[in-house]
Image (cartoon, rainbow, N blue to C red; front, side):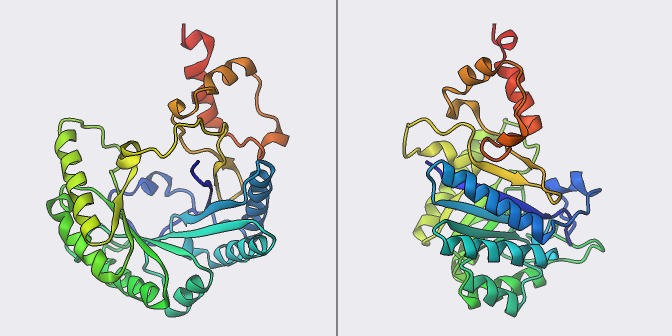
Length: 305
């Protein structure tokens, strides 16, 4: 079973203006999560997971750029440490663009055992030309400086990248750069809105070849495209899954969940009829208003006749 996963959107803002980022759609939001909301969300999630018999979960701190909200990041790490001492283990992940990692912060993250996931598109400034700040200046110098500080402090580092026409030209160069930095993994995502399937076979061959080359360099190379390549177990997964995103003000919702992973979900949805989740089930059975509504539309008796 995959680990339980809590994602805290600690900063609904960013210091970069990357051309392809999905965050572009939410630039109107500039909220910051309070330390109290971060602590409460972590406690509530741990209680819900423990009630199901789990003693471990992943905790992702992201945004926007989470390091624009250091008080909430510190509160989250402190709360995770407190729960860990009580027997519930949170594995913390920081999703960052890397530009704000100082020497002191890198040391703090290393002491807390935080995995640092840094966004990067290639091994040089040209490959990262679309990753600029709000006045159009390149982020490359600040990102590489932050990366170096994180590695020198002893942080485990993963590179998050986007497959574009430019980066696809030489994935080996990116893999070599990341391996030489001493990072352990590359997560290669596809751009939001990539629905053109005309070149899907070529992209698949490209990604699988890169995966094999990365393995030879001692790196894990994967992404959302690799989910179906191997599945450890055919056992049905829990429904609803403990995979929750919390917005800065504290509202919680589920990311998209493929229905085929939950063979009994359709039957359960029908048996519930139109009943809405009660407030008391918010954490014991977390649901997204949008995702739940979409799930109801596609699994209601009228939609499946």
